[in-house]
Image (tube, rainbow, N blue to C red; front, side):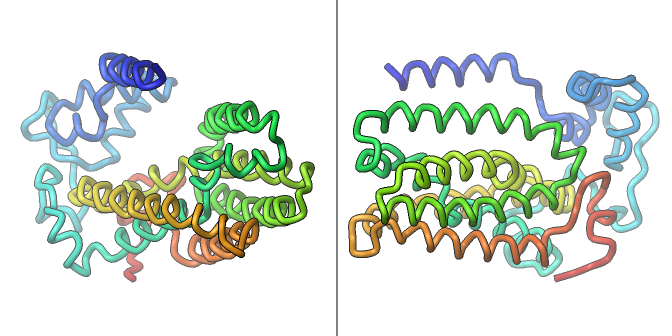
Length: 292
């Protein structure tokens, strides 16, 4: 029955969701892109037009009279010409995008979120035998609610500060969870679990998927997203496969200290490699000539 509800929800969303403004502008439907950006962002229509024009997409085949100018670095390649995945993976030109996109999406999973999403009930049942299922449902509710709260903060506070805050708090939370499970301490376990979910939803949950397209050239966005999602799901499989094995072995609750270490790695990675994309409108502006 739960699967049917999910299917209906998916189909309903497909019927009402708007097309990507970037795709519309990229394929010449700039007026539609203006309208959707205005609908999503609010404010005045002029601001929406200026945002779409700041993408510097070609408008030669669209419904605008004038083409949107390309930057010097984009003159030789029209944005409608998408880079194949093979070229994206083999060309050094896309190293910035590959390093950041692959790293942040793999680390998102290696920090351990799906140890809770997949196995929350089995983890909590030994500590809360009568309330494990209810607590797991509350975890999902908290995840959704905090994600909505985080949405306006991304543009207000910036991507990088939220990511750094998120993984820092998650590192502390996994320590609490580890000691809570090892010592069968219900207070540490529940505080650690809900703090972890809260701070994951605040930064490391939504931002990696957003930032991949922002650190990638317009012509390579599709390939970057495809590659990033593939790596993300492979990392999901690794965590989903190994976690129960480690949890049931001698390591027990100490498996969460592995996630603590991965949160520290994520913090250092974000600090060194991930640029702040808040307020930027192009790949060149994000990277300012830096090349990995």
